[in-house]
Length: 97
Length: 469
Image 1 (cartoon, rainbow over the protein chains, first blue to last red):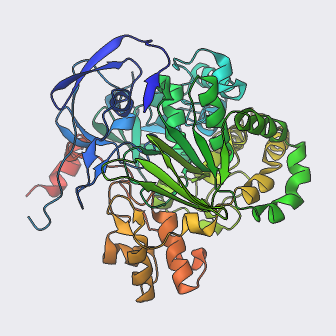
Image 2: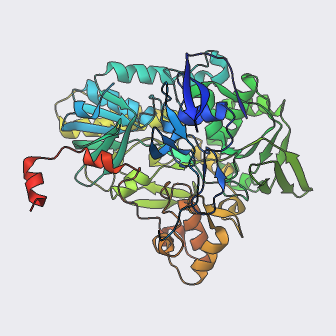
Image 3: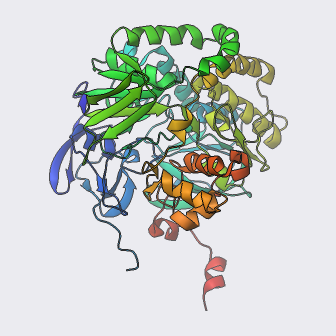
């Protein structure tokens, strides 16, 4: 959906669900996912529908991902860091568990 | 980098948000000798309009345009002012006593503020059409954010839909950056001209008139524009097609990316949670805080500046920030030297001139604000328009009661993307005004924080003893 105008900024390697993704300095987690063509970052807790970043300005919370083991982080507000472990959030919530 | 532990326990002025209003306010106050801290949750200052102004990889100044680069002066001025500016700082609480809860790098602190200026700006208005939750459907603002901050430009098949200045600006910026746009679906109702036309003379005198016309010409020369009154995003796992209708019939276009926009509205969450009184603004179709001439709110010591005070644009936001800061300085340090507000108010008036025309012209049609049927109103809890309408017809009187019935507004976005829709749907069903129906009663934390962040709050020996048995 998006391409980089120029490959500027040092490359930064992060992993997304265990696979290496090359990001760039200045990327947020959500921008790195979009640039890498990753089509969704979570499924919803109600119906399990796929969601991808929507507003990229900290408002919609659709870019929620697990970052270095902490769940439901806003990917659009977190700059990438070398070796960062990003995981997509899957699964409907189990009400009443 | 400032860490939570580096913060003082109190500042004379705390500014929340690092866009034009926040930067201008913090600069002015700090230079007047007021101890000032500015907290902003983004990686860098600039807010949305000047996003990544200090770090953008887009170096060709023509792509983003000179109005964007105006932000550099504000950022430089703030940096040189002596104000403490902290990015990556999320304010999750503000109360009537002006205690500010903030998290930086996973550590939380509660800071006392003599005065507070909320400069949390605006957000894009919800655009609830069928399929708006599908991957591949994003906002125009989102595409502009990654263009400014990461130098990402749309590729593959892209359609823009909606109304308002930002849509045309992003279209022009995308074309200048070498991106292609397959079509623009213009949702501006033709009848809006009836109410807008009387304000045209004022708009013709405003700086936005010539700029706006030039933008329209630049984009229309290269992108087909269709006037539409219905839009649907279609696809199973992601958007595959956009279906749109007008008087001339229904058409479909294959798309990889559909970008939506129908104006911006104040981001009310923090002010609302702090107890600031808001009223419905019928021209801008949103809730705005009740403010005095210095942007002081109904809560003593708390001001709301910038687009959070009602939409007026980035240059006006900076002037509003200055006026709010002067009031704060005068209250904190009556002897300090501050600029003359008269000149600032005149500049603000000039900026706000013509706003009525833009507001009336781009007022979104009812059908794009108050959806029907299975269209999702609350994205987080996946509550449909029909559910909200039926529950309102059953007797549910307002958004807060609606939470108990349907959970709308109770997901992670805390009502940011459904609040206006739910209020207007209830108002329509109950034949009441949005003011009568009201808005969600928001409570801190207004941004999610972890238990570990809360546990990191410093506690005194007395506080520890108070709960020990």
